[in-house]
Length: 212
Image (cartoon, rainbow, N blue to C red):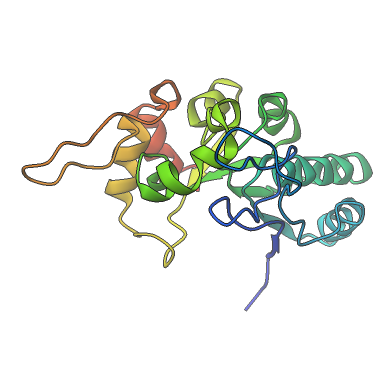
């Protein structure tokens, strides 16, 4: 047995407002609250930790769901790349629910892999009732930016986060391509969620195979 990776949980999830955000959550009526999520690991120490792990040959797999967590992870990878210029380790940022547009080009520049769980990028109760009203319209439009990441040159891989959600890669692939859940017999799939962020079938199959 040889350990090759270290997982770092940087934040929580958007539905209960523990995902780390650059700006506060809203109260559902468009007004800012005084809460912007939780950093599970001190952002001031994170670059030092990741630099040390990178130097020892460990890839880092970040749970980074909010835009502040994503930025903290990228900052830490940037510190490691600067300190360890010969490293070719492939660090992953998983989930990527909200990514600030300024950070999208950094994935390719830093060689950071976008590790996506595409099944979540759709309209369903957790999204429509527990997330969008509390992010606000602007940030809600930054969710699961798969097409933008690919266009910027980011390396992408795909997974399921089972047992949190279904491990079925065909369902997730359907959502990545259509930004809506597969239709049940006699039902409608509903409106696509941010359809401009849909990706092509070859891109999603690559993410699940060569990308992973």
